[in-house]
Length: 294
Image 1 (cartoon, rainbow, N blue to C red):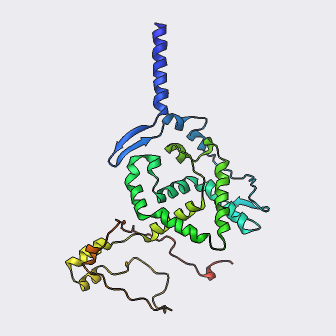
Image 2 (cartoon, one colour; image 1 turned 45 degrees about the horizontal axis):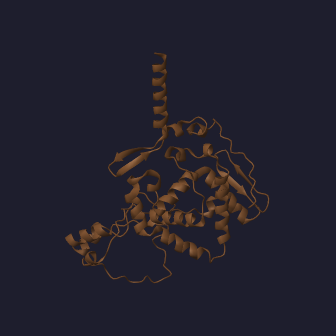
């Protein structure tokens, strides 16, 4: 009887160990998604428990890096806003990369992958549609062209210094110190590169200026005359508040554009862009110098 109980307990234990160590595929409306192994995530030695913070997080540390040319320091104020003090710009950008990675590594990694159309590598087939759309847009191609231009400009060394700072932080991480999102999705961060910075820039451009309502507008134009269309759908949303005052005199002559026609809808090959979300443009503001101390 004891042997039977032992064998039963052994099989149950082995079954649990196996179940907690494999990735399980779950069917979703967009395809199969793999759930990370729970045993690895729950492991007290390097699982999510290691990401717990004390009541008062302590960010004080010494950073040794061969890339730094002179003495520099980073301190966090009472709101945990980082302040960087360096004796040259390359060290400042290195530390900016280091601190940004320390605070936002998973966002940086995931968002650069999303821009390049590589999310399905992490979550499975459910992200294939999104990845293919990003690749059809040519996001990496655009980023590569931007990077070629950057390399011809003064200041490219700062992009490299920023990259080195990010990688200095990544290289000193061990698996138990990965941000919790990496553990939840069961993958590890890639080293950064100037190309990833360019991809990130393109994703911001996509967020702020890639949306359109061309298809909707052309279909509406087919149903009404131009005067009624312009009245119902003005060129600028009434909720927008432009930075440049209405009485500002323009110092250039705008180039006249050929008015769109209904036939245009039949002659253009479209990539389906999303409609712009409400309230986009969080950086659309400026402050007078009279409102600051310096």
